[in-house]
Image 1 (cartoon, rainbow, N blue to C red):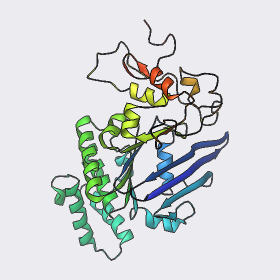
Image 2: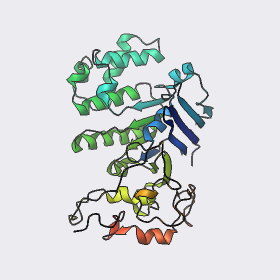
Image 3: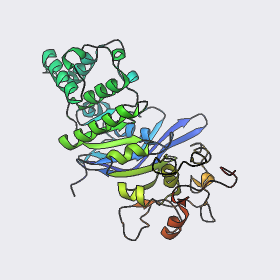
Image 4: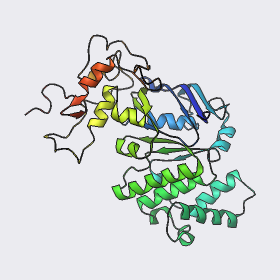
Length: 349
């Protein structure tokens, strides 16, 4: 196994507010190797995007409190200056943002914006050379008639094409690490499949180390090698793709999997869902943060479990749940498939 390219250890990100400190990320650790796709999944507000943005210094602010370690190629990034981070962004680590319409400047042509990004890092590149590079990138990401379309404005591109242009910008300087934050949000399933296929091809061809942030486990199943499941700022389960999908150990993961609609199963009498809402990060429940929404709560749950290896045959899989592996395998089966049991009275006729 190759050495980690990116290593995150006990990352904590809090934001001071008038009501207290919002601990958006609480003790996240993972390694990312060349050619690997690590997916970070969870509901909105679980800390996925804050984790990714912190890696490249986008959460630095007067009210931000950042602790822990983020090392890229052995170099510590949390203590790097703003000038160092500006040099690193795009050159070594690139990010595909969630909404390409608001990420591009609407009054500048797309080609000019990408050329500007290239020349900011490589000032010896002429405008003509930069434009040719953009044409090559547009062709690589499947934008037709690239020679002409580099002169279009963002509003002249469809949602899927804007996402492709965003991927082209991210790849312009051939980074080592690619962070894709909800790259298929608001796209129809056909375009979504094309974008996922494109990311997978680029990952294999360029040996990119990729972090994929999403709430859609269907997307994860397409491209990921390893999965981190986040809830209330913490990683509640991590493992390989097969471990997470076929032998999940945390009730929150069961709920996410059970919420997927299945075309190969009889239609349920009620669409599956996880009861309740994620907790406020200003007022987390005592112990396990998922406890108020979990139908399997018992006497030990008011004590917060650590993220530990609990499966005897898998030292790389870790989760935060006090139930034994045997109890988990029994309780996670709902109507013949993995899911989270509904609270009493919910979904009953």
